[in-house]
Length: 210
Image 1: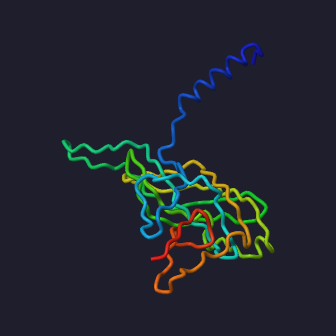
Image 2 (image 1 turned 135 degrees about the vertical axis):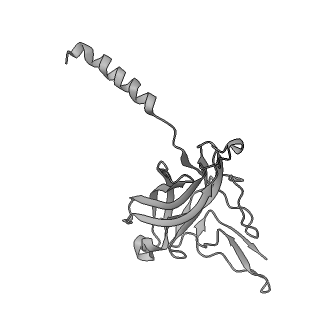
Image 3 (image 1 turned 90 degrees about the horizontal axis):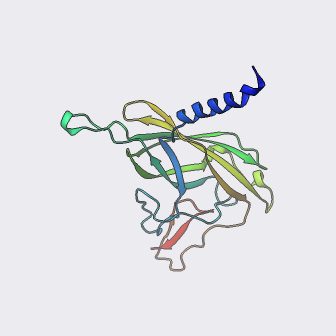
């Protein structure tokens, strides 16, 4: 190829590529701050976005549990006049996670069944570190701590049976041994301790006696 034509060819290729780029239909958006522990219920969107450090204390728990907001940009394609139902709701079926950091963690998969409505949002539950990741106190060492990057992808199907995969959503978190400890029990022995999410030894977390 004539070198004088190379910049033109590159520009044309880039332009052609830009025409085919589309926004992902289903994508993770934010980690939610948990509500009051006595209710522990979530709306279709995060009532508040968690802006603190996500932390997992292996001295207390072997899993990390988060509520995350998911967007589905596929339009509702129902047509009541024609009797056509909507087939663009997204049904999340699997959460795949790979890891980057000082602790060697094998890739994990978790099965879920959660719906994200067409042209809408939902808050779903995911395990960036599920129990079958095999995390123990030995994974971190005595009083140690490491920043891990969880690279989360969701997979599932739309109502019409076609499949989707979300873009990678990166969640950095601190994995430590003894930095948080267990939540203290209620001072009143007649009350019980409520946690949201119900997984002690992590942040985000809310606690209340009831």
